[in-house]
Amino acid sequence: MVMKRVMYALIVAAAVLMMSKIAICGSGKPIGQDVFKTQVKKVLDDMNDAFLKGDIDGFFKYVAHDADIVAVDIMNDDYVVGYDRVVEHMKKSAAMKATYKCTLLDETVRVSSSARVAWTAQLSDCTLTIEERTVSAKVRATATFERRGGSWLLVQEHDSIGLPHVKK
Image (cartoon, rainbow, N blue to C red):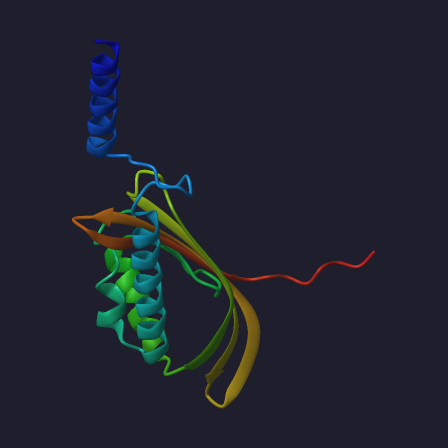
C-alpha cells in the first residue's frame, strides 16, 4: 500500500514537472533561453549588416513601429523618439553616403527569464569615411528588444563614443 502511494506521488510529480511552462534544465536556466539568445543574436547581426550596407528596409524589418521607441546616436542632437522620426533619421544618415567599417570587439546578449525582453551590449572598433575624411573610434552600443508574435523587435538603441579619462 505504501509503495503504491509512493509510486503514485512520483508519477504525479513527474507529470507536473513535464507540464510546467518553466521547466528547468540542468544548467539552472529555463529551457529555450539559449534558443531565444541565438534568435536575438541573429536579429542583431542582421541589423548591423543591413546598417553597414545602407539597407534601410533590412534594418527596419526588426524595429517596432511604436510612437515611443527611442534611438540615441553618436552625433549631437541624435536623440530620436518615435518610429517615424527614427526612419527619417536613418534616411538622413544613409543620404550622407558614409562608409562604415566595424570590427566587433565584445558582445553581451541577455534574455529575460520570461523571454519577452532581451538586451544587448556591443563594443566595436569602427572607422567612418565621409567626403574623404576618416574618423576612427571605439563605439559602444546597447539595444533592447521585445518579443512580439514570435519576432524580436528593437524598442530602444543607444550608440556612444567614450570620452578619454581625465588625468589628475
